[in-house]
Each structure stands twice: as C-alpha cells, then as structure tokens.
Length: 335
View 1: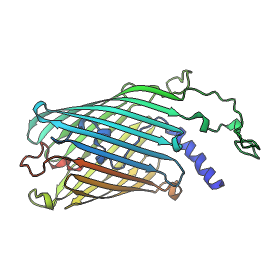
View 2: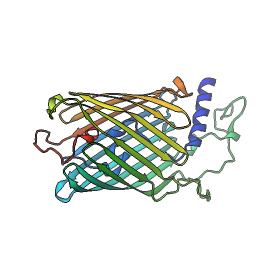
View 3: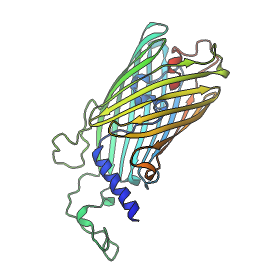
View 4: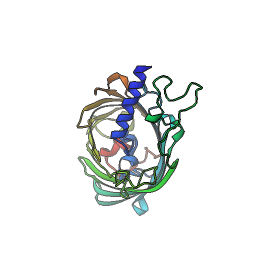
C-alpha cells in the first residue's frame, strides 16, 4: 500500500510539472492529423483511423487516450477534409479532456513528385474535473487518512472551482514532399486558451502553451517495382516536439515486408532517456493494424509498466488503380 502511495504521489508531482500538455502518440504515423493538419486526407478515398493509448498501466487509472478520425482527399479542388474526436482521461475520470476537431489541407504541386501542403485545424474542447475525487493536504489524518472513523471524507478549506470548462482552439501546419524525403512543421494552440477551473487570474500560467512539432523522414525501397503484394521498404524518421519546458525527440525506423509491419524508436525528453518503442503490425487490403509498447528506460523503470498503444486504419482507396494516389512512397508510412 505504501509502495502504491509513493507511486501515486510521484505521478501527481509529474503531472504538476508537465501540466497542460497534449497526448503524444508513439505511433504518430497512425495519427497523422494529430501530428500535422497538413497530413489530412492523403488519398482519394475515405480513411478511418482509431487510436488507443494506455500509459503507465501499473499505476491504476493513470492515463488513457482514445481517438477516432476520418479524412478524404478531393483532387478536383486540391483539398483534403477531415474530422476527429478524441478523449484523454486521467485518474479514472478525475480529469478528462474531450476534443472535436475539423481539419482542412490544400496542396500546391510544382511537379508530380514535388509539392507543398498547408493545413488548418479548428477544435472545440471540453475539460472536466471531478472535485469530489480530489484529496487535499488538509484532509489527511495520520490515523484514518482522507476519511474519518465513519468512512466519510474529511472537510477541506481549499476553494473549488468549475467542474467543466470549454474553449475553441486553432492549429496549423505545413508539409513539403520531394522524391527523396518529406518534412513538416506544425503549431498547435494558436489561441492559447485558458485551462483554469478557477475564476481567479493565474498570470498566464493557466494558458495552454503553444506546441511546436517538426518531423521528417524518407523511404528506402527494398524491392524493385511497386507490386502491392510484395512491398518491402524502410522508412527512417525523426520527430521533435516542444511545448513550454517539455521537449521530446523520437528517432527510429518504420519497416514493411509484404503484409507485415514493424518498427523501433528511441524517445528522449532532453532531461532523461525516456523509452524504447517497439511496434508490430499487419497491413492487408483496407486494414492496417498496429500494436506498440513503450519500454521505459528512465528512472521510473518498471514501476510504470510502460505504455501500450493500438491503432486501426481502414483505408478504402482502390490500390489496383494505376494512379492510386498523388503521393510518392515517402508518405507510405502514413497510409
């Protein structure tokens, strides 16, 4: 019991130091619109993506994230459209954030293999805090804990605020694709909305900070031609995220051989080595299924249980068409 309490207190301290940050998926390539709105709608057919992340499973009810998105490209107007619903739940529902977003991207093509895409996202966000499940310092008793001898919660003098807040958020992104590599940049929370449940002014500390993302990658084809049943390639890629004092760098490689997928990445947060990410999956017809595990290598170690992540993509493009999309293989990792 003491061991679990120490873990929980550590989790609270961690949350306090990285508050107001977004979920960051280990399978960022399976959540393209969350990564960069310029990646919205990469094919001329509906694409449905579902994501689930369970972070630190050894700590009861730590973090769970769910997302569903749909997108499609319209070649006649060089535009892509998308929508996303996401739920990020911490502490078994003590703190939860729900987001509904709309996405748009437009591409400018200089040649068949060189073009630029610009993207925009607008989201409505609802955050909820269950005050009744919180325990404050003045409620703790050395003998009975947070409750009295009758099992009722001890009173607190801490002020309680709203149980729910709403705000509108904006983000934008840019993507450059060439015959040899792709590179993108995105900025989220352009409106820097307030995330305080208290009515008192927080001197800017309650504002959701800007999130900057830079990502790039390439593709190394291991088989000649483009036979759909015998695809084999490596896709080295890098991802950098900055949000206030939080920094994250992912470096690794995604691979495909036939219907089998795999990958390995190293994630560093600049203050410590965070995790090694392993991914396995399959891609057959319209289905693409991936599972990844974050092996924690920081001081948190095995106490957290790492993180489990599952993604399912349904891509309804006609892969037998001669020109099945307008993009070269460098972006195959996202499709």
